[in-house]
Length: 131
Image (spheres, rainbow, N blue to C red):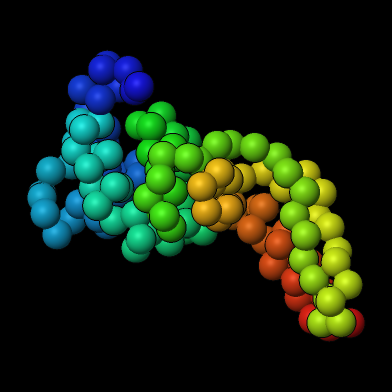
């Protein structure tokens, strides 16, 4: 349960670029309360560019309680965790990336990574492809 003080506080849109983009078609306000912010994020879950989020905006979303909802399956099953992730070479040989931190869905298996961890996966996949 998210703290009511968090939900009733006002947040400047200028500090959260993705939120500002989500809000701009609906309001000219420069600040929104936590309830409105959460509503906009939830409404756009499938359209959010997760790699475009700043770490500050991601933490804000977590504060609002958003990162309990999986954007892929909609289940309230996301948990922040550090796990090993297995990629496969073109010949099927598994390669393990260790200690990948992200928001993991215990319902569908999806993982939401922030920019640095996502880049680790992309770099490893590119390296596997080049071999």
